[in-house]
Amino acid sequence: MSHENTQRDVRRLADQLVEDLGRQDFDSVSHLLPRMIGADAPDRDLLRPLCAELVAVIARGVLTRARPDGGDLFTVALSDEGEGDVPIDDVQPSLRAVLRAVLAELHGDAAGVATQLEFIAADPDPSGQVDALVHLVAWAQDLPRP
Image: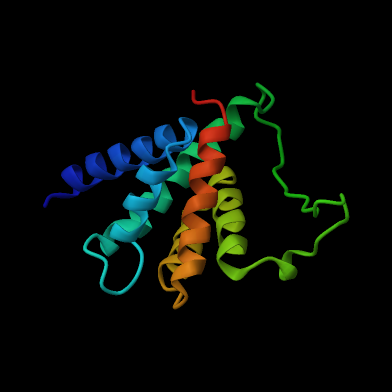
């Protein structure tokens, strides 16, 4: 399969996941995830490019809310349900990688994005990969699309 076809498939898959989540079609989402998660998953090679696509979608959504002069500096403040501060090191490693990938994308750091996506894809814990992907899909669904 060519790179162009893979990119088109990844964009379709990302759109489908975001739309399914928006419709609260959790059955569809839960059927798509096992295709990409785990050593025996038939489409495991799509996890990294799918995460990259969703990171880019999220960054575009954040940028639509940014100042027009482009003078924004992007940071993340983490809090728990009680509005207490949460140190970044207390966040699950794959979710930390998601946050760092989005920040790297917002700051134009392609190498940083690639490093964080590799961390997600190499996570030996499939539940970490699922958490990362579900969070990316949920964030992409919540943000305005340009």
